[in-house]
Every structure is written in C-alpha cells, then in structure tokens.
Length: 235
Image (cartoon, rainbow, N blue to C red; front, side, top):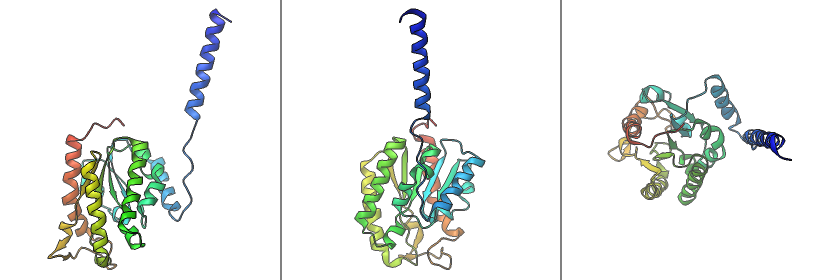
C-alpha cells in the first residue's frame, strides 16, 4: 500500500493511538477506609467548584482540618484545605491521588505525624512514612515544594513531647538535604516558659482561634516568601 491510501491508514492509526492514550490508565478508585466519607466530600467540593491549579495546598490531620480561617489568614493567596481528622502520614500517602495530586499545587503544607506517635509508632517509623510520602510526591508532582509543619506540643500529648521532638529533628535534618522540602517550626511560638500556651480547647489537643493566630504568624511569611521566590507553577 502506498500513496494516499497509506497516508490515510497512518492517520487512522495515529488517531486510534491518541484515543487509547487519552483513555488509558484512569486513576484507580479511592480505597475504602474510615476516611471514605471525608474523601468523598472532598470530591463533591471539587466537582461543585473545581479549584484552580497552583494554589497552596494544606493537607494532613485535624490540625489542618480545623483551620477554619485558613482562607482569610492566607489571603490574598489561594489555599486549599484538605486535612482529614485522625489521619496519620500513611493515610495521606494512601489518598495522595485524592487529596494532593488533583490540585497541582504550587506548594504543599503538610501536618501529620502527631497521631502516628500517639498510635505507638516509633519516631524512626514516622519519618520513614514521611519519606514514602515524599517519594509519592516525587513520582506524581516532581519538584513541587513541601513544607513540613512541626509536630505541635499539645497539653493532651505533653508526655509524647520527646518522641515528637525526635520526629521534628529528623525531618529538619532531611529538609537540610533536600531542595524540595522545608521545615516550619511552630513549636517555640506555642510554648511559654517551656509549657504549652493556653491555646487549646477542652480536649487539650485541638487549637482555639488563638492557636491558629500563632500558626498564621509563623506560616504566612513562608507562604509569602514561596509566592515571591518559589519556582513558577506550571499548573
């Protein structure tokens, strides 16, 4: 076969291949866990109002989830809150394709690990879990910057402070070796005379608005700096 017939056949094969590529390898359905309702709610929010790419994504456990004033605290920068309560680092990695990847963020602000320690995981395991999250980030989002917010010194988990400090120190050391990871130290602002400030609700774990005001004082300048000097987001 030659001439026009051959050309038409080649074009047909090209279109067929393009269609196959466009429809191949859809994302697998999210796993079913106790977090399924929250993950489904995120999908509903995204369907109703799809977030634009290149925002600042905040994800992790309930300290992110309950940051109700995040939009106002970081304005005019666009932020997306995808914290889900009770989650450990491995849970965020498990749901990476639902709570991180779709947003193609300019940067990721990550808070998890506190529940891991409370569940009995050793600091070295917690850090290993976070390294797996970073591996997933590398695979899915390349050089996107991650900011790890230090595990916070709460009243309820004051007895776990030493293990939290080990996690914080190890991740800070990891950040010193990576250009795509920074450590955001909220711990000093949350202490007064070596004890937790009065910034917790009755459970001694979750923060009052005053606690989030302290976080804003530490985190907002990081967002501003990333917006000014960070690598351009391709969306």
